Image (tube, rainbow, N blue to C red; front, side, top):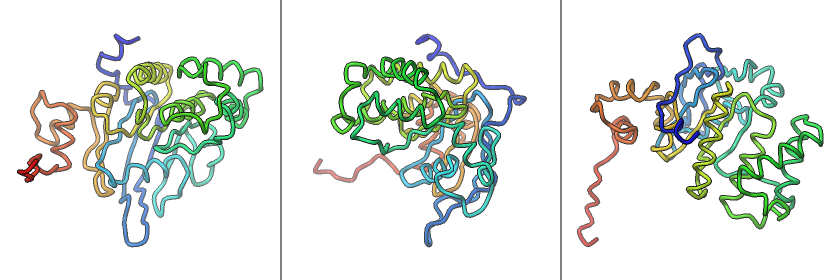
Length: 269
């Protein structure tokens, strides 16, 4: 599996079913337009990256796509369900890992996964089996009887991801999934997510870890100040940004967002 991670991701054909569709979604908070007329189309089986500087509108967009907040205008369809009229069905088909997971910290890791699985309609036997598998995958088996309140940030991230995976979602939304997680666990999670897309699920990931996004994602969207700057494969983004043919995703991203010079101007440093 690790060898497959180092290969270029396989791009689903244009005939693959639409998994995530956003048409002209806009969200304003007071006088601030957080997301402005964003259009996205992600196909089934894609590992889709969503990049932008801090405050660019990434988390707001993800929250709208997940049905956590409503757009002021525009339409959303995820896993074949319309967010405006089929929100409950849509939420049953997706998994979500927010940047800062909110967990029931007075439950143990195993209890939390049992709760999450049953909330998605799994019976107790299936919940227990899947919970055990996920705890092993996340290297949390020895800590499964500890209260989540005693978990580290990385452990909380992992148990939250396990909860998002337990019902085998059709679409998985990940907002900064690798923050606080050790390199060994990151590798395991990358392989698990890659396997998930191979089985036809869609992964939508927002991350500042450019190397991971470049290795895993079939296509990438770049957002800044609430507006999309470009969507495409790395090669297509290189062309859009007029970057060199050997430019990394990080180089392309920095050029697209017109990042300031790295000169600090602090001679005393």
